Amino acid sequence: MKKIGITGSLSSGKTTASKILSSRKGPLFIADAEVKRLYKQKSFINLVSRKFKIKKKTNIKKFLKKKITKNVSNLKKLEQIIHPLVRIEMRKFIKKNRRKKLLFFEIPLLVESKLMKYFDIIFLIKANRKTRLKRFIAKGGSKIFFKILDNKQLSHKVKSRYCDHTVVNENNIKIFKKKLLGILEQYE
Image (cartoon, rainbow, N blue to C red):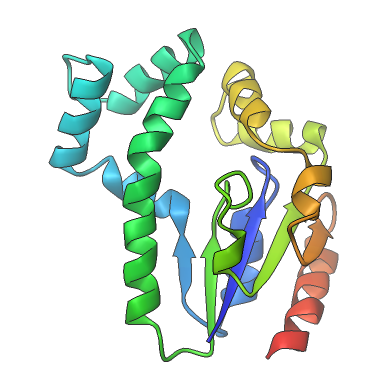
């Protein structure tokens, strides 16, 4: 079994790359999907509400965004709750799919969380800041929150030292797909 990590900065195109790479090749673990699932669990909502002293338990994400915007250190507190829970799900995913030839993992903070040793191959998806900001806003994000999250991440230059392949995703989806699949062929 080969474990393939896909990472990149905010709105760089990790999800698109993950879908292209894993399509009919192997199962895909998406860290952000696990986080989304956590926000639907009562136990998680209760835990986060207590930790951040949030009284109203509906629309908790909105309250957390406000707290993070006011004090960026709250993002680290939130990550200390979320990351271990996501890693538990990642281990379950590996165990469940241990007989598969290729496993794919879309992990936004793969390098920042020092998870490189868990993967055989790591793809870094890269796009310039202006393109990423435009994509983030198009998905309903704000410029302020983009800046907070983007500043939390390492630069492409630093991340690329820990990745096997860097693929630029700025213009043409066909070229992007061809590059990704061309690299993946080496490992099939």
